[in-house]
Length: 186
Image 1 (tube, rainbow, N blue to C red):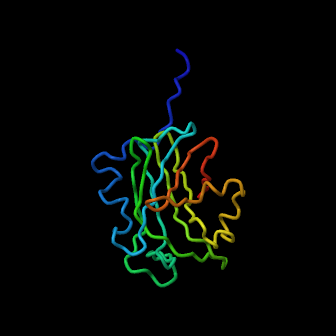
Image 2: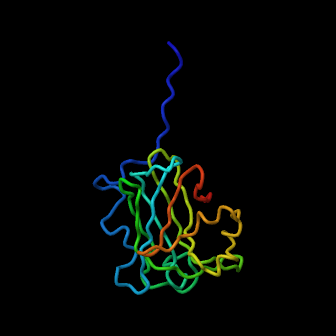
Image 3: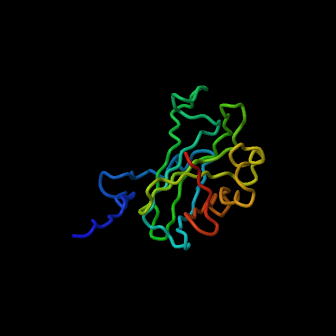
């Protein structure tokens, strides 16, 4: 008898949409449509070939408009009931969307200020670990001094910037290859 066959590693998904799974009906609605300043953040998740990832999940989490989190580890005055979290599956074309608001700037533990941004987690079949990135806002002056964004090589920063479109902002995510989105080890 020969050596045992190698078995594939366990990966995330594709169980996201099963009853009792990770999704809920208003998961992409971080804020209601009628909230002042709300906009759509839309995009497309693609693999290294540029093909859509039809069974991915994206999660966003962010501060409120004043840069506060409703969380006990945020030592500042708490926001009133701000959830700041959304979850959206990708469709057959890899598309996703969120309705949210632009967060305020955030203080860092070292006294610097982070530019307004939205944190994003990507989960998909074939991935052993989540991928984490950020969405920064176009034409935001604070981007020039953001302590995270300024550490990203200048030629790759565009992969972290949303672009305006007719419905709000667009942020496409490429998992590998040419034009790969910058991901962070967290």
